[in-house]
Image 1 (cartoon, helix red, strand yellow):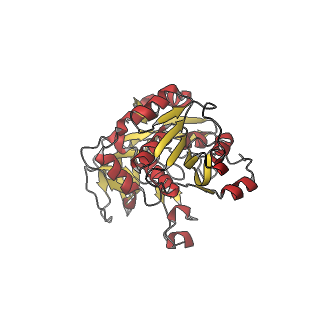
Image 2 (tube, helix red, strand yellow; image 1 turned 60 degrees about the vertical axis):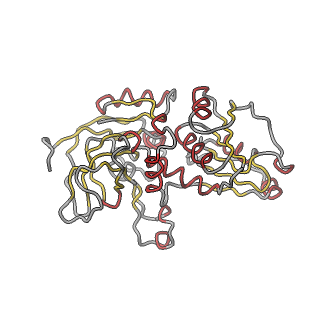
Image 3 (spheres, helix red, strand yellow; image 1 turned 45 degrees about the vertical axis):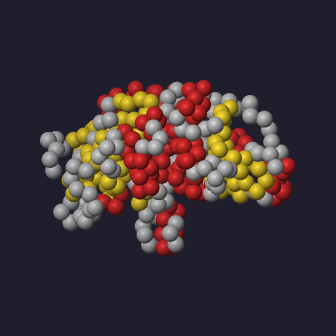
Length: 342
C-alpha cells in the first residue's frame, strides 16, 4: 500500500446522539476488496437517524458515510476488478448475499442478509475505506468527485421514479425539495412529467424552479386542496420528507387512478391515518422505495451526461477535520448537500 501512515481519521457513531471524530487503522485488504482513497463524502439523513439510534440495523461504532466517491488506491492481488488504480469511482453501498429468495428473484435490495457500507460496516466518512470490488463503479474523468458522490442518492431516486411510472404529460407533485426531492424533480421532469413542488424553504423552491425543472412551487398549506375522485389532483405524487403528515398529504393530493410513492424515510414508530374507502374509491396505487436496486450505473450515466447542473445540490464543503462544523450546518438545514472532502 502506498500510504505513508497506518492511521487515518474517521467519523464514527460511538454513542447515541453524536458522531465523533477519531483515529483508526487504515483497513488491510482482503481478497475481493479494493482500497479507496475517499475524495468526497456526503452527509445524509440516514446518518442522522443512525446517530439518534433510529436505524435498527446500524452497527454500533460504525464509521458512517454511504454517499461517497474516491480514487482506487490499491486492489488486492486476488481480486478481479473492472477498475484500475487511480480511477475515480462511485460506491454502491448495498451489498446483497446473492443467495436468498429475494436475490434469486431480482429483488436484491430486499435481501435478508444485506449489508450496507456506512451503516452495518465501515463507510466513507474517512480518509480510506476498503470495499468489495463489486461495490465500485468507474466514473468518467470529467465528473468531479463532489458530483460523483451524488451517485448513491441519485440511484435511490432513479428507483423512486421507476416506481412512479411517469408518462409524458403526467402531472407530478413532489413534497419536499431537499437533495432527494430536487433529484426527484429533475428526473420526473426529464421523464416527461409536469412537476409541482411543495417546500417551506424559499431558497429550495427557487432551486426547484430555476435549476431542477419544476413549473410551479408552493409553501406548505398554500396549494389548494383537491378532490381526487372528481379528477382533481396529481397523477403521481412523491413524498420526499419522511413525516406522517406529508405521507398523508401525498395520498390526499393524488388524483383517482394515480400513484403515491413514499420516498422519505420515516421513524420506525411513525403511523399515518388513511381512509381505506378513499383509497378504494380513488383506486390509488400506494408504493414505496427501499434503497437503490440496479440504479447506481444508471445514476452515474445521468450525472456524466450533465443535462442538469447537479453541482448545484452541493451547498457546503468541509475538510474531515472540520466534521463537527459540517454536522452543525447539516443539522441547521439551511443548505442542501453538505459534503466532506477528507
